[in-house]
Length: 464
Image (cartoon, rainbow, N blue to C red; front, side, top):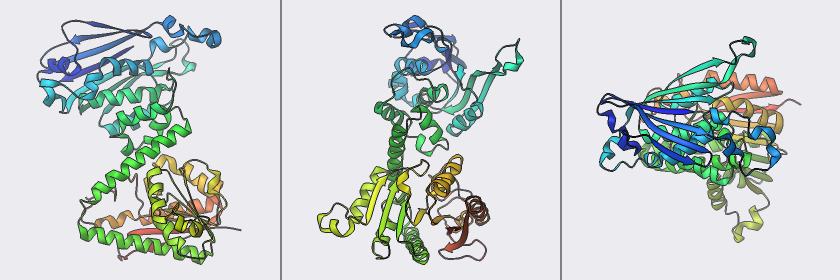
């Protein structure tokens, strides 16, 4: 299988310095599963191409194994496709280039270059549409060449392999890291054991872009072979990193705007608590509880006898424990039995969500990828199915009132979408009807006659 990088521009022969591979001579590297070769089929001032050719020996793949694998150990597609073997070769042979170190050519290494990468025979099964969804947000122009399974048997359909081409203005180190992480996402057949170290590897090489990627769920799940404990661990780490970034961004917002935001948060919490009282709920769970601001408000009210909070971020839960003084001996007898905190994600079924009169989803849904909303609906309205659901989310129309938000931008960098008032009402009414609920929608915050309010709230009541 072949992987090539083409650099177009001025003095492109310096690609060899960035890759730490001499263009004047081919090089051979012995790997545990075969040999790899690096050579330059094109070399000029205007265009230079570096190629990595991987020659896998199927006998080497089977050597040392018992007979459990049978014939598959010797007859398979591994020698002919771009897979995790290619990722391992890239990380080993271009290790220094992936770090971005280039000595006297450091300035060139730090600059976006006009690069084109071609990955031959990438296995993506029926996921060709995902090629664009995964690579375009990273700044690439995406193209691929597909093939029929067999020219003599058209009924067999298309092959599950494609030749993928990526073009963009990007740093070499970023290109290598993107491909290193994403080849196994599409191939899905890693040749080595998947454990906690794979989470570290993913975050080390993709932590600076994965948390804001619209397909981070798809990428993380596929990279970790859909092993839920590892996927949840990775998401928790990503959320913690996002929270740190949010705190840093908060310092840059003018004090007047921060004060307005604080006032809105207080109004939002007050509205939610009032809605819960009106529902006469005695047990409440806040899914996506963050640092526990709503939980602290609920704990002040004697009506709420059983309170729980769940969040994907372990760091947020630790901060919630501090705010609620859970674990403090002076407060343990008073609050301990009333408040339960646990780590979980609202896009996965969790039996601990069940059994509460009301579920609160406060400023959470907009952080979900649109592709995950259907799963969210089934988990909340069908699997958990409480008597009451209280959900709040920003009103996109109101963003124009915030001077620090650019035109067309979302309220926060981690938001995947924001609904207008009509869009939220349409979703809420359709979802309520589908799962046997009625919904009442109201505004939170100062109301503009043309734009509505900053926050919109839906109170869903189960039809009985």
